[in-house]
Amino acid sequence: MKTETKWQEEIAFLNDIMRRTEMSHSIKWGIDVYTYNGQNIVGICGFKNYVGLWFYNGVFMSDPESVFFNAQENKTKALRQWRFSGMNEINDALVLTYIKEAIQNEKEGKRWVPEKSGELEISGLLANALKENDKLNEAFEQLSNSKQKEYLEHVNSAKREETQIARLEKIKPMIMEGKGLNDKYIKK
Image (cartoon, rainbow, N blue to C red; front, side):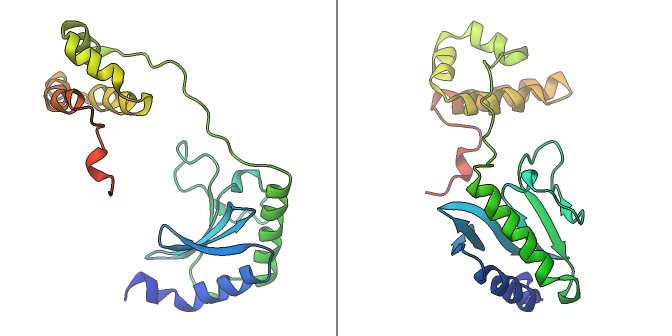
């Protein structure tokens, strides 16, 4: 059974709860997303084993029933998930209480703002390669900080020096072309 059809009843019920609020509905990233004044508040998405509510600024919520999951500890900063494995787990009054708190938090301006990363410290084999090749260094300097960081982490995350060298050789032409490590995944 496809994920989309497996949770059809639960998603419809959660959408009905959302419609009882002052939020606006839209489809973003292929899922139902509810916004308040243009800001994402909550999303609804079905997965293999559960249907979930994504609270985009859930980190600021009180979570009195301890229902939230942080999908990726130490990576996900603000997003919190509430997971349901069936209709019997969805308490509409409780869901509405959480939604109202999320809307109130938005009204109060409680919103996660990503931290700006500081100066990037280039180290290891990549630093050596940039020192030895002025053209490579110039091309690298033209890249955005995020692309520079991707390349640095890609090379330095390899445990073996042989792997670091292989990765460095593979990325040199990409840097010279002004491409980011993950540009091939960007849809045009």
